[in-house]
Length: 128
Image 1: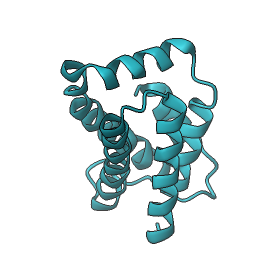
Image 2: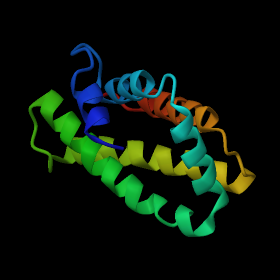
Image 3: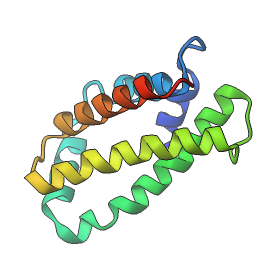
Image 4: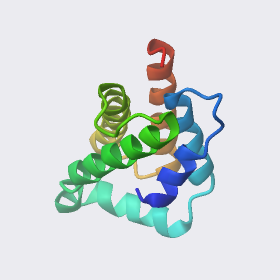
């Protein structure tokens, strides 16, 4: 996760809610992931030592998404709404990654699709 994702979320259409903006940003950014990202994902899923670093990646994701939501909404990054939405999205990401690890799914697109489906479910539950 990097500043490109942050910009993709921040620049999502204003009429979208925060979770819809996260989904749109991720879909746009990862629509056609390069082979390097696919290979890297497969290696991380297959290698226990690398999987341990996923927690740090998700923590960085929560901070990055929180900053993007704060910029979109004009709220402070430490605002309860911002942190809750970012953390819930991070939980969805962790769930999809845990599922990939549990079943040995090394296909990046499958994991991204599961993240998007989880975010859609979360979006249906939360009126942001």
